[in-house]
Image (cartoon, rainbow, N blue to C red):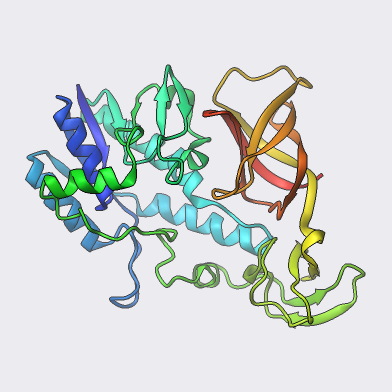
Length: 347
């Protein structure tokens, strides 16, 4: 069938397009322009002009149509949300929203426009019998970022890399002579071109409230120039207190940033809002046993989830460090992704 493949100019999406073509699909490539450019050659987005060029070169080698689509307005909305969340003392995850709203939202509309039956990306994930599953390469698995995708969208989604490991992907690219075969990975948020997210926050409405560093008893131990510079669980960039301390809480109104020793950021439970299920939703009040991730690189921890509507309380079998408001909490049953939501705070 005809498949719209999102191409970022990296090796993963390049190989995704190649494998689709080898499988007999008619592939159409789409590059998403985010409208962001760095101030120097060293500051660039992963959706930069050079990435567009690399994607178009790969598309030309494969002999497939290539479209660069302007999503600057949509990315601007993501950036505004990103900045506002930091000013509210929260730590946003724009990649989840990008997948939900753009890659598996607007791109599906574009797929309809070009007569494509499915959308494909270079994500490391799998869809099995309509369910989202973790990738074969657990170190590269990206299902944490995909919990917000609608089930109907998953039914029209292909993840060609789901059963591969990263070294295999690079080998396939090299054997096919793709220019992206040895291209380094982009690990940063695509619109944070300088490497410092605070530049984005301060360019889009200014800093958060300045205030005090306080200890667990509310005693002042230092000053800071804005709550946007901190996230729960952070250790670096804090006053020297003689022993390691971590951010435990951020008050966006008073500007107080609470610092505690390591054991002070351990929590047994949390509240989650905006719960989205990728399987049939449990009944209100029904306990669901699962493993839960509170950040992308977190080892999923056994937990009990009790949801009521779009809200849920999650109680962990063992305490979890740095439960961070604004981050995603994603629910797993082995390699199945059950769903997830947005962390509101510790319970």
